[in-house]
Image (cartoon, rainbow, N blue to C red; front, side, top):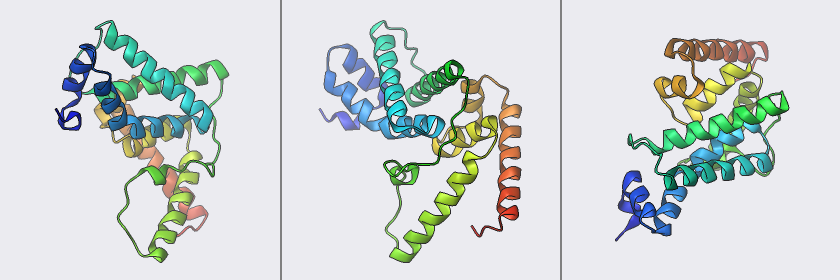
Length: 192
């Protein structure tokens, strides 16, 4: 049986019946998206790895206790767990970290990119770096919505469920984030 061909729920069912490879397949399928969303919140590689491990410990625990309710949205559920653990971390530390990307991790290395000419690749990298810096300077609630929408690829409905605010609040935060990004681009006379 080709595990990669199975959907998330089929993998979960196999895992619960004792097939460890099914969980490894599930993990490898979603690890980049989950890790990236954690990293974008905490901006620290070691902390992101710790929270990532906590996420999968919680997932395994919930699955084993048969408390996972299958709605066909495993990745959204996992991202909600990741988000909640990040929020818990910040509540404990009483601050939101805004640290620039490190040399060891860059969000744009995770995202797929077609082969470009070297010049286009360099230009794209510079633009991504500038944009990443601008996103880091947004207010926490706005940065959070941008990360969940554009990097975790969640809908506004999913964002509102994860952040426990209304869809209109999520949309408003995104609107203000875009307005603020445009202002920063204009103020710094950046060419995107």
